[in-house]
Structure formats: structure tokens, C-alpha cells
Image: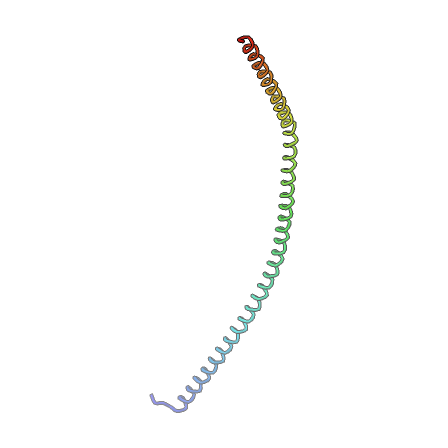
Length: 136
């Protein structure tokens, strides 16, 4: 088959047009990808900003709750400390009569022991006087 220059020329023109169309389509796809990337990035930034705002709100609420728990814990600690003081005061007040009774009993026992020693010493000295004087 003989090659006709007109046919070859037309084939080359068609190929050049197809190559230009392919380049234009690729450029369109790249522009579309770039626009889609920009929109996705902007949407992601907006979503992250909303998430940060919600996290800030939650953080404030959690901090408020933590502060409330700290206040309650401090109040509870003071209450338990005061209750311990009251219990110790009541216990010492309850123990005070026992202590007074024990101190009084010890004092009376000491006096009774002193009297017994005194009477024993007196008897002993009286006995010695009798025996010493009778042996003379």
C-alpha cells in the first residue's frame, strides 16, 4: 500500500490534536485534584477547629469538676479532722473521771500504805521497847 503524504499528514495532525487534548485533560485533572485537596484541607481545618473548641469546653468543664472535687475533699478533710478532735475531746472527757478516780484511789492507797507502815513501825518499836525493857 502506497503511503499518501496527505493521509500521513492528516494522521500526524490527528495525533497532535489527541496529544494536546490529552495534555489539556491531564491539566484539568490536576487542577481538579488541587481544588479537591484545598477543599478537603479547608474542611479538615474547620473540623479540627470545631474539635478544639469542643475540647476546650470539655476541659473547662472537667477543670470545674476537679476544682469542685478538690473543694469537697478539702471540706471533708477539715470535717474529718474536726470530728477526730471532737472524738479525742470526748474520749479525754470520758477518761478524765477514770483518771481522777484512779488518781484518788492511788492517793488513798498511798495514805493507807503510809498508815500501815507507820502503825507497823509503831508496833515494831513498841514491841522492841517491851522486849528490850523486859529483858533488862
